[in-house]
Image (cartoon, rainbow, N blue to C red; front, side, top):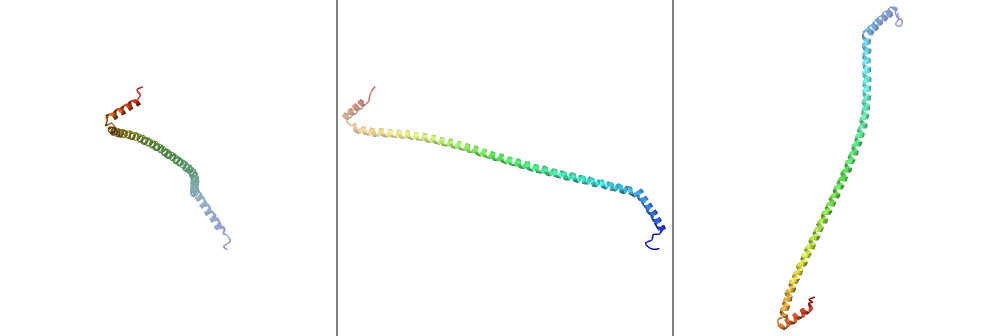
Length: 164
């Protein structure tokens, strides 16, 4: 017989062998294989769901991270602004205190100079008075050496003085 013509006996036994093989596979292997495939399919679906959930969470975390970064920047800017204002307030207060202290020192120095000036004027007046008295004493001593001159000077002064 030729290679292309099937032998009926061979076909019959091949079909019976194939049928027994299918029956054995269906009875013992098909259910576990289908069960394993179903478990594998569920595992893959669960993994895909978990991956999608993780992707969503990552996007949410990215949005949250962006919001937190923006909030941190705003807080930082607020703190920097507050620190600048505080610095400016401290500088203004220090300038004000320094100006007040300078004004007090200047006023104190002015008062000190005024007192010292008055003391110097008073001392100068005392010295002038002393010198005037010394000079007058020496002049009078020379002028009033004679009694006639003494009487003339006394009379003249008495006339100048009013006793009212």
